[in-house]
Length: 504
Image (cartoon, rainbow, N blue to C red; front, side):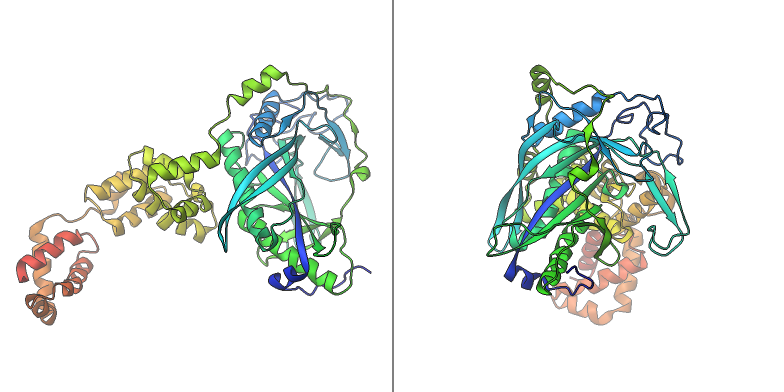
């Protein structure tokens, strides 16, 4: 009996009966100049169907050629994930019909991947403090991406209910690395956090390797979440579902939690889980059925006859190993020590994806405290409000350092600095140009400030009397009045000094 209607079981209650088992498949688009098997450009955002050729369109007589840079990137990713690098691997044809795969098969790697048997480690916060989870990597293999379908009409953006569909083949053939974990067991109630932390660590890793921009919002990195539930007294994994193309860290965490609740509801009702792909809906936080999931034999894999095997020499592999950057975990620990951040502060920086931004801002002259203040405060809020990644706001680390330099020089204060950031996001020029154009510079004329202080005292005689009687804390009200009159363009510290000189 298969499920027809799902009653969700609350997450905590589901874990009383079941243990979640996860398998995460992360697809990373490589930032090569050309596609996996042809010379077409990979630049994002081009006009539809302008970056195609007979090879990536699967025209008769066209022959593929492997992108050497993609192979190099695959090996470096494998090494960074502690994988063994195969001395001999080959491509295969994965046969299935998708309208956005013009060849009617995908060139991938099947039983002989370029990298295999690796591991990485992630750390999350638990009730008992920070805890490390080891994630075993089954394989990392090379393949090509599919095109992109656009379903026009309807309310969901999916094919069901659409009036018609359009296909853009620009993405078809872009180099991909698919990183597949072994089943992740034992995470229990922390399974959603472990999934998020793992994908976040991969994103950090591939960016550090400079093999991908890992922009999840653009689809250059996305995760398929495989999940099943196993009764606590069982020894066999349950039937899995695969939630496809989850494209944000928050959504990875939410998708795991939702699928645990959905599976538990089906199993508690005495029904069977359908092995299927599912779609994640960011707006509602639920998954819906896609298609019944095929097993490997259904794809009729066979060796790609038009491509020779990939056989990296030991010398080349060791040469590439020497190019690996500092491991992200070691780098974070080093930077935390250099910046003087607490564990909580550093965790917030990592969670916001701001490590690189703060490092560059400090390198541009700002203090670590100031860099963190702006990136995790005002700029993080703007990113949350717009739904954009924090590094896609249009504000650079150098500009943040320049804004802080203006604050340090007392030409603007923090409140005025926020208006400078408004101008930077709007593309109004450099911080200096924005300060001048908007007339934001702090009033430093003591005569003008003294006159404003006099007016504030006259308007608030009761407050002035309290200050004369020694209640200095009351000066805050007069400072506020002066700042309001000066439209925030006054040095609050200097205003306080003038008030106390006058009244104390």
